[in-house]
Length: 101
Image 1 (cartoon, rainbow, N blue to C red):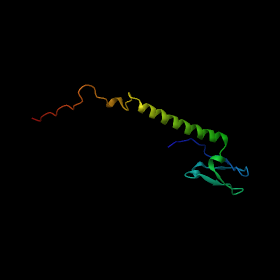
Image 2 (cartoon, rainbow, N blue to C red):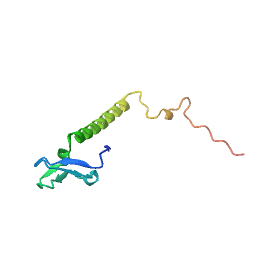
Image 3 (cartoon, rainbow, N blue to C red):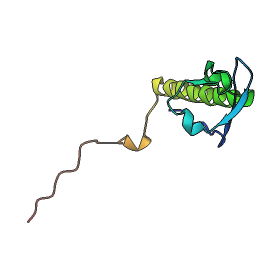
Image 4 (spheres, rainbow, N blue to C red):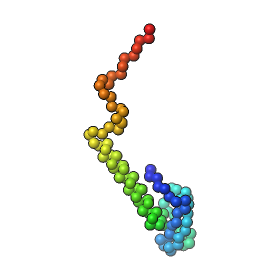
């Protein structure tokens, strides 16, 4: 999941009538579309965002995808180890248990 730090209030603009309004990002959770409070036209939330907020979301998604691609590239390398602490040097057999006397 990608986390994006949004302001406490988002300004949206209806693409149909160009009316601007402010809404809490919490009210947008799990929603993809809104209705304009002035004209009632349904529109995609992304289309109603200001340019700055759109760029912020775009760059957050782009950075997350680039990070995931880089991680996959690293995992595909022949010399990749997820955790150097898991590499055992020498004999990998566990030590024998001591006999209780």
